[in-house]
Length: 97
Image (cartoon, rainbow, N blue to C red; front, side, top):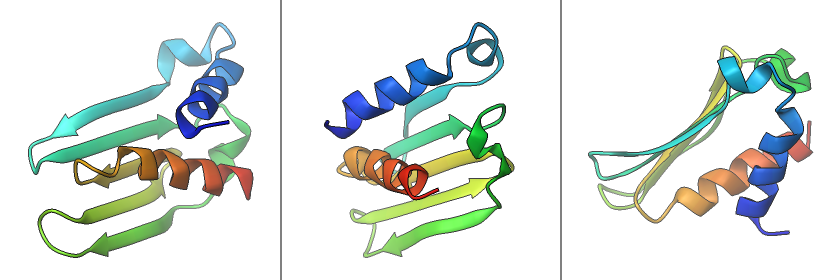
């Protein structure tokens, strides 16, 4: 299963009539330019995961990525070519929980 389909499934699995009204997934652009992906883990089995710096790589203004989990929220930031990798990092992290 590709990462985007996996993320759709993960989201759908956690929509229970309540969770999606307070929490969810946000994918947006940033002006660096790049991507910001925020995934709420509150009210999921993953909410207990500790604050953690998952990845922080920078090879200049056009090649960078940073992913962490802070206060029950996964956040990934990356250059314009990193959206798929951010989702892959989230998937790998969750699947190894």
